[in-house]
Length: 168
Image (cartoon, rainbow, N blue to C red; front, side, top):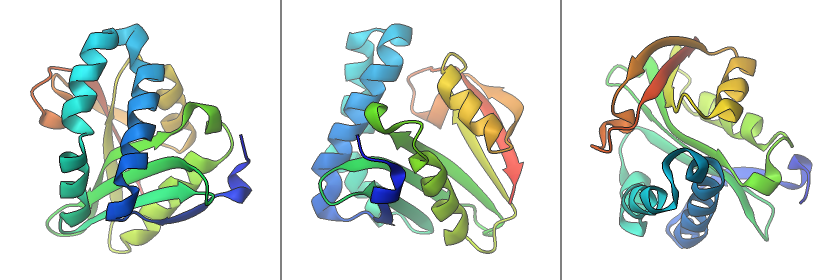
C-alpha cells in the first residue's frame, strides 16, 4: 500500500460514495467482526454506511466530509459536525483502510478536520472500548476519556463506547 505522502486530503463528493462505502464496510469487518460478529457488522454497516446515509452526510449543514485519495484508492475518510455555536466539533467518523493504517493518513485526516472549523475550541468523539487501535490513535493525538455511552452515535444499536475529548 502507498505511503501517506502519496495521498492528498480533499472534500468528498457524490461520485465518491460507493468507494467510501466499500472502505467503511471493509474497515468495519476488519475491526469489528471479532468484537460483534460478522452478521452484526453487516447489519450496522448496511444502516450507518448505506449510500443514502453517506449522501445525507454530504448535505448536512456545518459539517465536513473529507477523504484521503491517491487517485486510485480512497485510503481513509473523516466526517465531523460543528455544534450550534461552532466552538465544539463532534468527530463522527475517522476510518483508514486496514492496509493503509500506520502511514499517517489518520493524522492527515484529523488535521484537516481541525482546520475546517477555525472557531472550534474542542473536539469530542466516541470509540468502541474494545477497539484498542483506535484508542491508542486518539491517545496519541492527546484525547482523554471523559465519559461513556451505551449507544454509540445514538443510532439504537446499543453499542457501548468511550467518550473522548481534547482541546484544539
